[in-house]
Image (cartoon, rainbow, N blue to C red; front, side, top):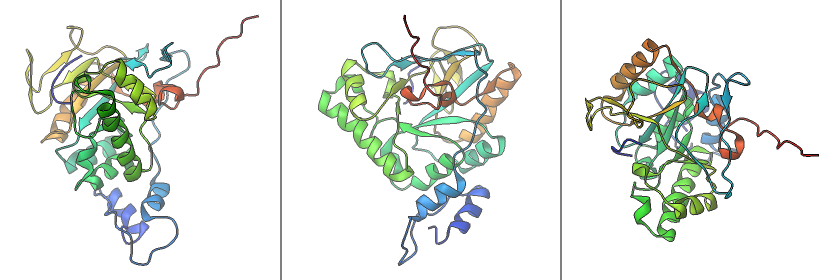
Length: 282
């Protein structure tokens, strides 16, 4: 999203490379048999485990009554937490991978799948630093301007590619520019999407935001600073490591901390929290 506010020849070698801040070369050894090197590496490294919210400290988002993926732009919580999300993927800053891993910062990546070509290894490193790879379409169109078939191709094809590359099918979708319509939600559900995650604030890292200047921060509600449960939008741009350090500094100075948004979403919406049973009547 650009702009708008609202095997490794052997597994051990791959693990050493990731631990050192690099990323694995995803090519299988000649004559390799059994589980793929990618699968073995995933099982060795696993996903990062992030701190979970205390019971009663937040209100779990609920499915929409129409049965389609709901749109979520912030989390209702008493915790002084914000959620960092990063879109696109056309600039690759290796120092950013090191920073995320070293500081153990939870983020969520919304990957435009066309950028996997030639840089798939970079996002393997991000995935193994703990970032889920979620759906941001194939090539970043304005979804509301497309018909149903074209929208479905954008979402389903991107999910197919991400699943093939990273071993997990996306369940959360972010429409480019925040542009979507009822059709978007319908076809997203057909592609396995469980929720649309928007944002409540944007850090215009590496670019100029309207009214806030270069590397400016703007809230969608026109307010200032952070609010508990903010979902913050950033982008993979040149100099991301330094820009991310700036954002982390602002967050900590304000007495907040980054948290993993998936730990505040029920499984029915693409998160990790068990769904609460409906209260019985009678």
